[in-house]
Length: 417
Ligand SMILES: Nc1nc2c(ncn2[C@@H]2O[C@H](COP(=O)(O)OP(=O)(O)OP(=O)(O)O)[C@@H](O)[C@H]2O)c(=O)[nH]1
Ligand SMILES: [Mg+2]
Image 1: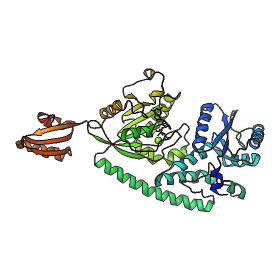
Image 2: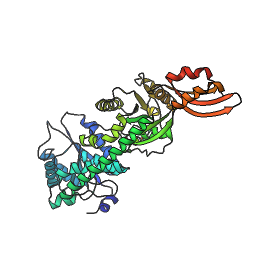
Image 3: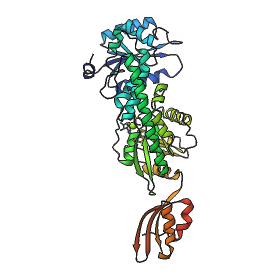
Image 4: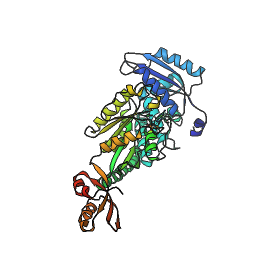
């Protein structure tokens, strides 16, 4: 089976959820609709069954499975996607019963990650996560193997087809791990250098589709991909941003979070999330027009705490305020700002909030230093604060970004040119 046979026709999906009361199954399946669309397929319908727990053999009850089989053949369904994780045995049983290719929520999310991964590191991470997840789900029997040959849930990064030969997979997994380790080392070196150079980092985190990349674009005109599909961003993208006070920070866009993010994925995207975890300031962006924005903020905050970010300043950013009936009703706290990233409204307040939370208080000064006080310039130069100097008849004109402890030194020469 070739990838191309599948990619030309839009695949039709039937969604299946089971409601055990463990999580909000209705909201979760709504999200699954979005995920299927993000994968470029068409969600045709969904089936929900209330059960105490999933059936060991087929997840859903056998009566329901019979109905699903009929529905699939009458509605030209290409694949079934379960809104939960399926065991290898369950997948095999369901496929045997329905004769329709079946994937689970995790495979679907991995598939979207695969299509969206842009950098080499991102691609390797996705492929590794995919192979690790798929490995036990390959029975080694011819039929299942060929089923895996294409379609949503089994596409590798880029245009590649995922490896389905178990022996090759093992070797590939080893290779991917080594490559990733090398990349992680390089990233760490980069991070260490930034730290040494005193680069201040600001990470944009939040639920998927909150408008993180849009905000990044608005703030930096970076041209980062932004789309109304889940998971538009899979790789950390960094851009320099100059704050109104003259301080430059490194703005980092991150991968969007999702409820019930499978654990394998948190693992796979650790390096991206680590980048956020190590930032000096964190912007927790949410879509304030979503009914669930408070839940989204909570999911993100919880993850940030898990990653050890509790000591870092976190600014809550209510985005898409243009779609909110009454933005004044939003629960505003001390470090909360309301914006509309798309139209660039409220960015001034946001930049102010970032300035207020800078790790070291910095201030831009325009100075006129008399020739006999040149030692002040030497001090500023040693502190790395000097931006420009110009000799004039009246003295030396200096532009400097100065840390708070040195303010008293320069204040006598402060001037406005
Ligand atoms: N109405 C409105 N739409 C917005 C605003 N900001 C972003 N959007 C839209 O929301 C959608 C998602 O925006 P993105 O910037 O891609 O979201 P993201 O958080 O980067 O998403 P992921 O990368 O998937 O995590 C796009 O269609 C944007 O145009 C806003 O302030 N108002
Ligand atoms: Mg994005």
